[in-house]
Picture 1 (cartoon, rainbow, N blue to C red):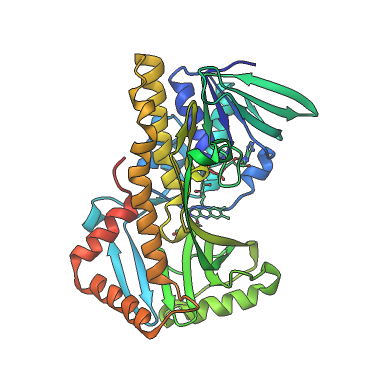
Picture 2: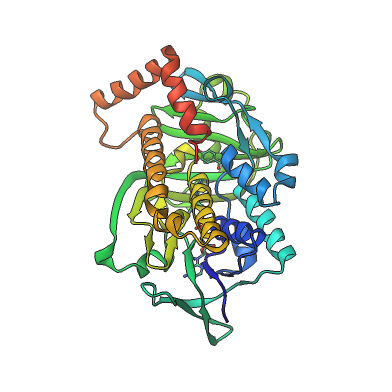
Length: 389
Ligand code: FAS
Ligand code: PHB
């Protein structure tokens, strides 16, 4: 097989990149390790920046998002019984859109099907070859048959555990990592949300988040031990713990119900530099990971897709390779700002096992500055709604 851009990974990064390049007349093949059903069964991000919404619209896959996406003009932060609201529209000029990553992926799959461009599922043994030449190729197995794709470029959109980042020689890449001493236990329930906006709660018992997917589908998280297990948590235990972590005005009115999904996600900050090597370009979780506290994982992936799709269009449509050569530097400049914001939100809102009294005072003082100073609210709002691409 031959194509212009081989895309490794059929998650949001790979699918969105494939759709934008297809619209520009650039041929791609997407290789995905899992089945389509498995990819669509993942419950992940829930908050989209306007930049991602615009990309989806420009890529011709924004109709359902425009219809079902819920604009959120602010969010609530609580600290024990105290609360404050960050008004996104007042401080940053626009809302965020609540629309599940699962739906983003569903929309992109529908577009891939409509385009007729190939996506191969349940592939294995993916190997990237001759990355430092002008004729890279990909080898993989599907249905027990070894196959090869010759291409001009390879987009590594295969997430944190993918093969692409590992295909950059270790002496050519530098990795930065911070792991957090806790995880997030998340549930999905067919119940009305605790509040019409998201609630980020810092309590003496730990962090909690009240989010949603639609007016009858709520997404909740509580901070849990890093070695915790879903089986340790009955639904009742989850609801009791969530109530303990919310101010009474929300705890007393919380509508509970059976969980339809329950999972624990570890939290880490991670960046790989550079995000390119020869003809390989990394996008999204393949290159960087953030703790979900700032709702940035999916949105950071979208910014990479914007930069890489722009660079590939300049190369193919204008024969200009300069943007491709500058992709990693351009993407990383924004990635590090996302890493800082996600680390800061996580430090502000979680209880750390080794936290000192001084550390607690720092959290309280950060909250006091947010409550008293509109410049502090402005800074948080700018990052939360999304920095410019
Ligand atoms: P993805 O990991 O989504 O997709 C990579 C794809 O590549 C996968 O489909 C995988 O099967 C495939 N793949 C892997 N190796 C391969 C190989 N060798 N060959 C072919 N295919 C291969 N972000 C938020 O903003 N908010 C959240 O609440 C949130 N919750 C999360 C919960 C969990 C458990 C995880 C893991 C992430 C969460 N994230 C969240 C971050 C998440 O949304 C990612 O940022 C987003 O999925 C990034 O998309 P991709 O870069 O496409 O990576
Ligand atoms: C979610 O709805 O899954 C969600 C929302 C905001 C976050 C993290 C997760 O910061």
